[in-house]
Amino acid sequence: MSVHPVMVIFGLSFPPIFVELILSLIVFWLVKKVLTPTGIYDLVWHPALVNTALYCCVFYLVSSLIV
Image 1 (cartoon, rainbow, N blue to C red):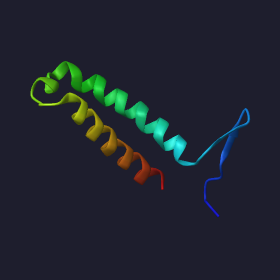
Image 2 (cartoon, helix red, strand yellow; image 1 turned 90 degrees about the vertical axis):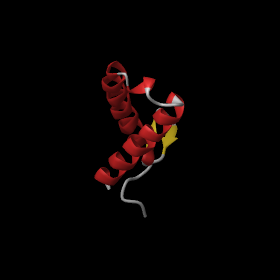
Image 3 (cartoon, rainbow, N blue to C red; image 1 turned 120 degrees about the vertical axis):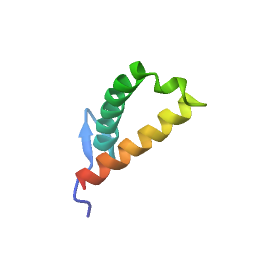
């Protein structure tokens, strides 16, 4: 049995990882808001790949802190 049960909101079932995904998305948006004015995206070849890698890193940190 899982430590975190399935959440049911208005008849929709959400897995326990849903909270981690939403929390990491919020943290990602905050980090992106801080990094954008610094001009870091002018130095990278593909900003979308950097955003994807950044989100993966943030998700890993959030999920390792919650567990």
